[in-house]
Length: 343
View 1: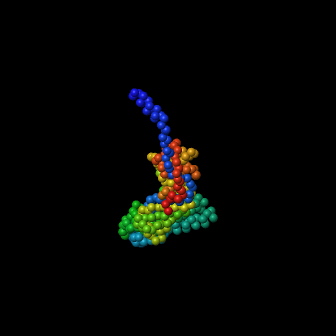
View 2 (view 1 turned 90 degrees about the vertical axis):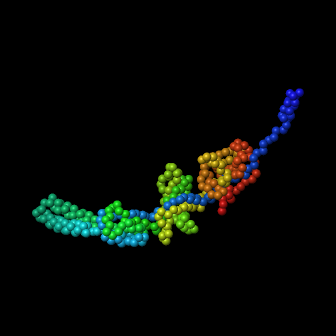
């Protein structure tokens, strides 16, 4: 009796109609090529266009200081005078020796014409004259080193010495910075390297002036890509005629280019898995395929796809958590990826 009941139950279950699983409903988006502005933000520390520590070339005592801290000086301006008594004496001695050797050389040339002096003796006199000229040049160079001058126009820093101080070539007298232009070096991903060009606009912001954008231009792009960060260094120049920006200030730099087309998908279509990125592509028969993609720039609502997708393909934008590779889906609506970005 119990066996018959079990058999009847099994027969009833087999005769019952199978319940088909309904395909998940999803929202899809077409992969489109749209204008996607290149905006790269990177932190950076400002540097002067030119910067140098002012040091003497010789060891000597300071006799006069001709600059005030923080003032602007022109190229060639004398900043510090050093004791020059010995240097002047050396110039006088070298000049006197040259006068003698030049006179002897002229006399030797006259005697050689009458064969009263050999050619070899004339050569010796001429060589002595040339040596004395070189010695005078060296003495005058040493005298010039007693005047420490600004190598370029700029603003001097704090004074580190006093009159009467004995300075050496290791002594820092002050600093000199050309801050009329500020240099900003920042890193840009190599994926955007082909879009970089000299003259491209940048906008820099500092915590010291949060409401003021400082605009400049790309001056150059490094010839090498960092193998670790996969980025290239870009140098921008920012005008600073009013002197508000100082070397060492921290900036956030944004590099902008508006006319850069790119393939994009909705931000929510990207399914990250560890360090890899995937999307679900809706293929023939509405069957989904899980495909790895390489992403690039981002902005709210949109992600650039560098590789893995073609323009016009359909991807799952909403409902990615419900689909499985190789399974069908019901596409009950579409979103326009071109309208996804926040204004």
